[in-house]
Length: 194
Image (cartoon, rainbow, N blue to C red; front, side, top):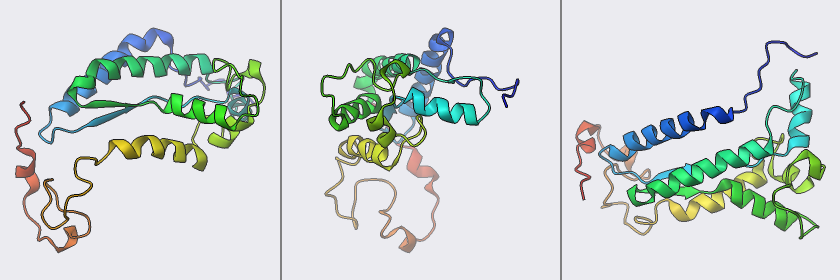
């Protein structure tokens, strides 16, 4: 039974300017804090419309709540934002592209049109079913793809540092329980200016 109060959660294309503005406001805030973080900006994953529609109908929606085309546009906006911030320690994790590449790799049709992967017009997509649990959320295979994208980006500056004398502010997890409590407030008073 469809619930009249159910509103599809897809972001309306009229809100892209607001989405961009809000994302950039978050980037301004997080890039200005004392720890000088590297920020990973992740594109949304692609969807599998047929699989998602099955779930949407079971949840009481009248029809498919998201379209691959709109999700692709959202991923493009995230890529544009990341490109504009790459000189300010913002790194793009293109999960959209990585999952699409994996879907092509898993597909028996190597000539598949990337624009139609996951769409209803392309039919049921078994590789996407492998990567997504319900047409929207990542499966364990999807998370493996995501992890493979993230691992090279995190911790490369300190991966070989000793745990007893690291350059980072907080103690390594292996010794943190041995360090007596102290006021960590001062740890955030670091000058990030170039």
